[in-house]
Length: 155
Image 1: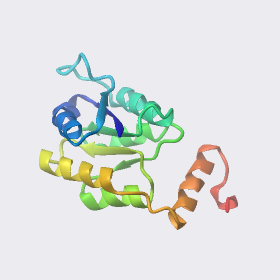
Image 2: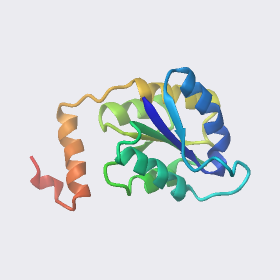
Image 3: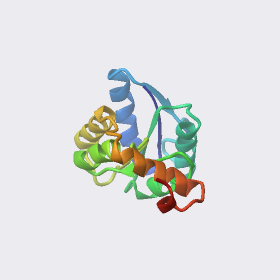
Image 4: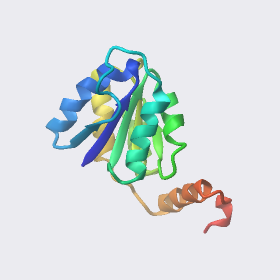
């Protein structure tokens, strides 16, 4: 699977450890916007936009974003059509973000999660399939909202 990764300065260490881990599990990893500023402050919306657009355009199958809390990345990424970014602070939220919401971008907190838990969350998120069924109808309604339509009118 091709995965785009992005982070701000607070998420850099976490991403640096996730890159070889993901590659070691057989995934193709693409770093977006992180090449030349490991020690400089940067703005999370810039990185979220790069990863969200790569996923939205189909250039990557999924994305992973890490900032201090994960909240800012999640908000910014969800502004891009076709993105279903989810903040996961534990394995359960990672599992449900995939099985119920078909999340295509995982957002995590560098400040609140240790590296071991980050990897467990990533593993859970990567391995969990979308359940479909009644959940597909709800994901379709999210697409209706993106198109500016009332989801309650969609059946």
